[in-house]
Figure 1 (cartoon, rainbow, N blue to C red):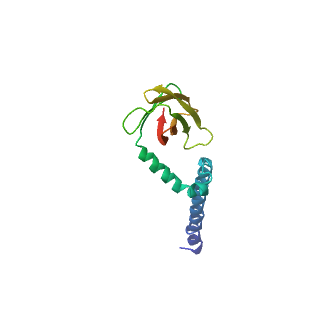
Figure 2: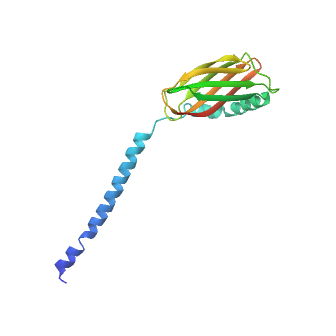
Figure 3: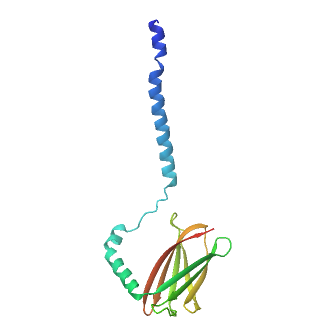
Length: 162
């Protein structure tokens, strides 16, 4: 075999390295593009202060557990992007808790700026309810704050609305 034939048959080897690095650069570029496009920018606001208040949150959760209240939440679809929220609230003796102020917030876990606030009205027998119009179907975190003359109760429930 002549020297010219050997050079031609081995000239593809450097292009293999160039092609391999090209594939890596294209893959990394695609991953970078999708990472930038999909990041919502949601992060914890005031993370340091929330960390400092962690012991207070533990004490609040223990005080809530001592109350022994029972809360049953029912969220049902009520048409296009609408939900009916019903909360049944009982004390430790399973008696209905009347005269509570109940507020709820639908929080979108993946997109900020779409929260929906509600005030649940008394329906009698320890039941409270409201209807919500939501901007999107899908997953929501429903945060409930209950203020009663005998104590305070807080709960969060993940709900999915179609």
